[in-house]
Each structure stands twice: as C-alpha cells, then as structure tokens.
Length: 154
Image (cartoon, rainbow, N blue to C red):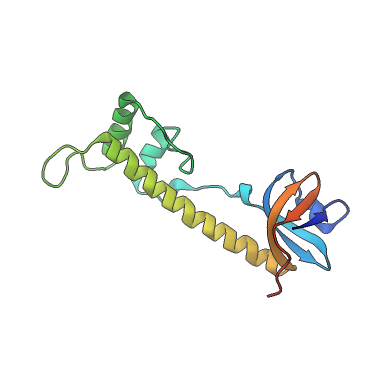
C-alpha cells in the first residue's frame, strides 16, 4: 500500500471526503480522483413492470441492498404494481404467479442493470484518469489517497 497526500495537489479539487476511489498518479502525485460512490443508478432502462416495482417498494429501489423480509402485504402491493405495468398476472399454464417470484425477478433485473451501469461508469472513469496518469484503486480519507497497489504502467 502507498499513501498520497491530496492537499496542495491538482486532485484537491476532486476531494469530497472519505470513500473508495480511483486516482490518476503522475510523478508520484495524485492529479485527479473519481469516487466509486458518485455512481448514480438509472433504472429508467428497466422493463416497465420492473420499474413499477422499483418505484412502489423502497427496499427494492436499492437493488444492491439485501432484502431479508418482505411482508405479504408489501408483496401484494409489489405484484399489483407490476401487473398494472404489464407483468403477466397468470403463468403460461394459467396458474397464479407468486408475488415473491415477481419481487425476486424484479430485484434480479435491477441488480444486473446496476452492475452493467457501474461497469460502464468504472470504465469511463478509469479511461478518463488514464489520460492523466497511472490509474490506481484505493480509498480517500483525511485528505489522503491510500492506494491498494503500486501504480501500474500501461
């Protein structure tokens, strides 16, 4: 691990406090930072019924968070919102679809969408930083950037 001071460096303008980040290092000085936590999930590209579930139930609206328990009442609300937005009320053989299956499927779709969007954010952030110097992953804290590994030459 290696620690880099952020004060009085070009990266000081990007510093917003502690958090996981990527840094561009040039001549052993951090010149730019991009925080992983600044990623913003956009659910608008999800299917309409999954978006309805996302908007109707707050725990599902954070797809990366773990859902331990959803009450039967809340599951019913989730299924009603999904069906109103186009999710089939009955299965292919005419049987009922469990509300928990709807919630699980929506959560799975939203998690995959979040992973794809974060991968795009990561790639664009790292490409942007690569133009400025060697890119390293680490953490900002107390006006320092602590890199997990030595800067790699590419």
